[in-house]
Image 1 (cartoon, rainbow, N blue to C red):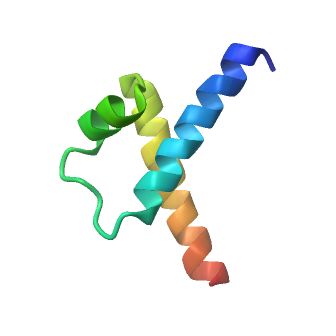
Image 2 (cartoon, rainbow, N blue to C red):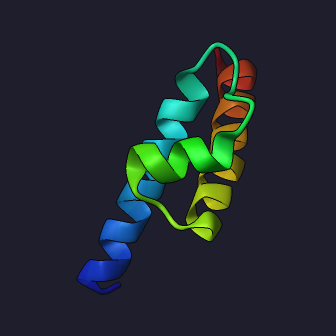
Length: 62
């Protein structure tokens, strides 16, 4: 994995963690994540999918 890939994944993961911690997801999550974390549209979508997995894992494992 290159340094750029690592940074990309870290930004997406941070955005996903932030999103998963929100009581309610923002109505316009993609623009919010793009602005807040400087992600591309594709990265924001990846963060949303990852946040959904985080929520499922939290429910399953307390």
